[in-house]
Amino acid sequence: MVVIVDYGMGNLASIANMLKKVAAPSIVSSDLAEIARAEKLVLPGVGAFDHGMRNLDARGLIPILAARALKDKIPVLGLCLGMQLFTQSSEEGNLPGLGWIVAETVRFILDADKAYLKIPHMGWNTLQPHRAHPIFAGLDAEARFYFVHSYHVLCENPENVLAQTIYGYPFASAVVQDNIIGLQFHPEKSHKFGMRVLKNFAELV
Image (cartoon, rainbow, N blue to C red; front, side, top):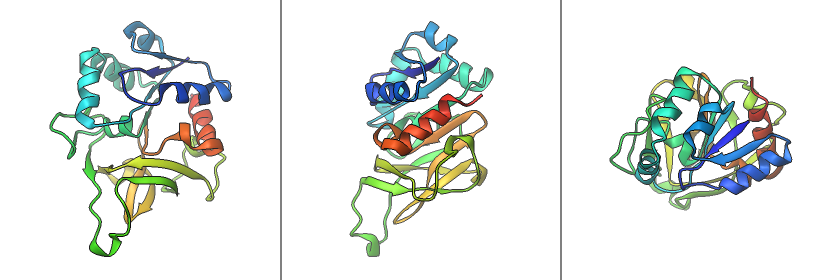
């Protein structure tokens, strides 16, 4: 069972609907017992970094999420803000992140010659995978994904960068640390390509 973590932020119903389409059983929950029994976790997110961390803390979710991710090592998927919360900190706020990946969330800073590019980065874009990973199985170079973000993740260890996307400059659009996977884009808004990614996640062992 995939548990989509409800901490008051994210496209919960859209993610659940996508998982249903690929025949992956899922529930939306903030119940600690449900999370403790989960085979996989999805941490979604839309909004500000500090708001996300406050919501996780207010619901008492941080210890159980850390136990499942770092001790039990079940597959965990962070989407958009959810991926950014995996980092140690963000230029968007003052609170520490979950710190599961040695990385910082930083704002887009575009050179003057890229001023025609608007922030947030919004719309469809492609990925440049750094290496093969089951989360991207069955996708080709033409696969496109939907992004909406003003900040991106900067990893200290290049090995944590699973894929990059170019928007003014290359940024990490997918990160990985063992069983922990982060995607900056929204698979639930990315049609058949996002559906394939969620199917791949649901089938991870």
